[in-house]
Image (cartoon, rainbow, N blue to C red; front, side):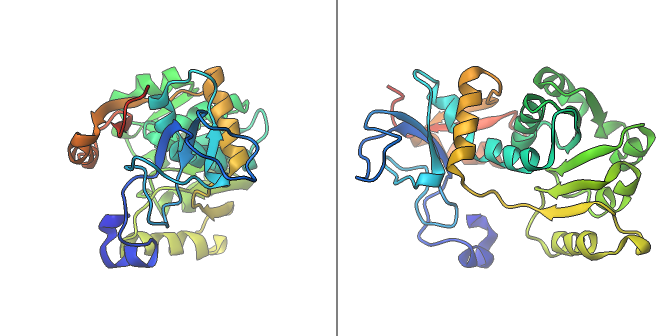
Length: 286
């Protein structure tokens, strides 16, 4: 967000500390807080529109941005979960029932790996797209069917499958507008198409507008088109921590860095090759 330049000033406050997700232990609570106490371990997602960030020794967590962790839960695994798991949960849970068929475009990224696990926890049949190299990971997480985007165009492969989906979650965004416009071939008329991925570039915005406003009689999609922004929610985070504690969903960690290596962690992130979450230890896990 900080690297969006001038546009970022309309979204967040400056000066800005980087980072949204964290885990840690409570050192103080407000008088009207009853569900958490000092020394509890918590998982936190900070509001990205505000100045405070997770690369800090202390933060103030709002009610909708935290959940208490199960006893002895690994703080690294918790730190990597909030945004990706919350995004996956909020883009899947409202639109499915047990037995629903879900397509997750981009199954090997953060939201995708969580999405596969959450959709399976909700009793869904899951098809996802990924590269050949990430196929084993997606299958291990529970995906029922894989579309290898290295093997050909995703839209063409979806048309060839005899599956009509109840929900499509697009974590990539670069496939628009075709993925949505052609969805009449593989998305139920009453189904939902949820866009998560994408950039703030002019071309991406144009593609979203084209997908959202082109009527079906002019070649547009027929299903409901939803542009999604992750919102903090206390109950949603509580459900996620419950699943984490039960082992229903697992955080995939790529690497860990110490606080003094935070710049190297960001350089690693920007390579775009991380196979999971990148964790920075601001302080000892003890």
